[in-house]
Length: 134
Image 1: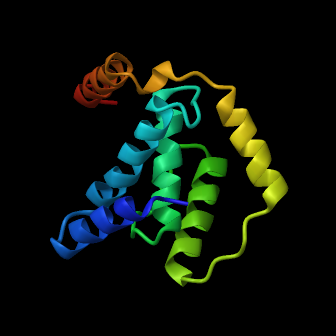
Image 2: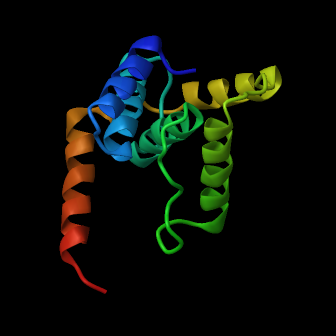
Image 3: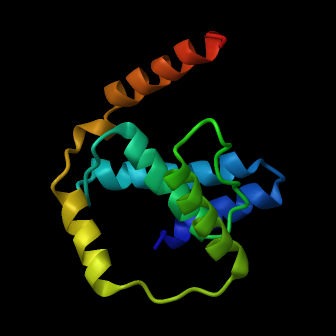
């Protein structure tokens, strides 16, 4: 469950007319903070970003699932389910056993993926890839 402060920040961005990706950025920021403060870890910066985007979709941010060529079919389907859940407004109580399992798995992962250096490497890799054409 996202923190109240994060939800308020995202709503503020929505009121200002900012894009869905900017609104979702608040959730990614929160996730990075969680990793940094040791609440849980992540295997890579991409995983931490994906967790934040997932939370954003479930919270009702109108962030569409990724396009066909960018991710696997499994990831896209999951993003579609999360998007639908967030848009319908009603939520089911999470399975305690599954929640516990996910939390324990993330606790075992590393914390260094949210370091400024790791995020810088990620940003540089993305900018290098953006310059290439297919």
